[in-house]
Amino acid sequence: MKTILLVEDNEMNRDMLSRRLSRKGFQVITAEDGREGVDLATQQHPDLILMDLSLPVMDGWEATRLLKNRDNTKHIPVIVLTAHAMAGDEAEAFRAGCDDFDTKPVVLERLLEKINMALGL
Image 1: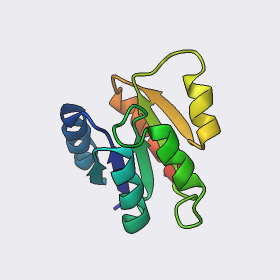
Image 2: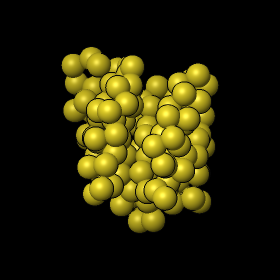
Image 3: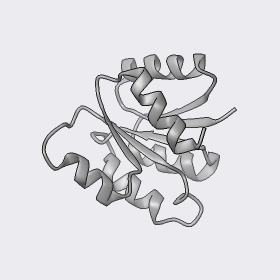
Image 4: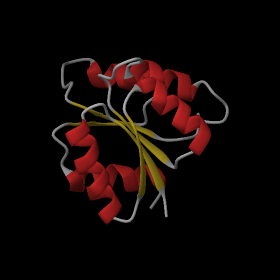
């Protein structure tokens, strides 16, 4: 079973997406802010991270930069999930080290395709 770390500060989004991914066979661990996400990724070594960008304590861009600059977490694929669909946001996410980018509201089938591609499934 593949483990996904979902870093999302909105409780309703976090709970809904966690349940949907669990029903698809993934183990899901969650973090409510970027700092907690970095800590959990370092401790738990998930197979993939879904990262919101607008997070308290530490935003998703900074959290991703930290993870991609650490030897023990740089290999973990990071897919951005964000309501930020402004010009330049996707490019900025890739500059931060994200492996893929998806917008909210989440379209589960599209997201699952991106997850499966990132995990080589």
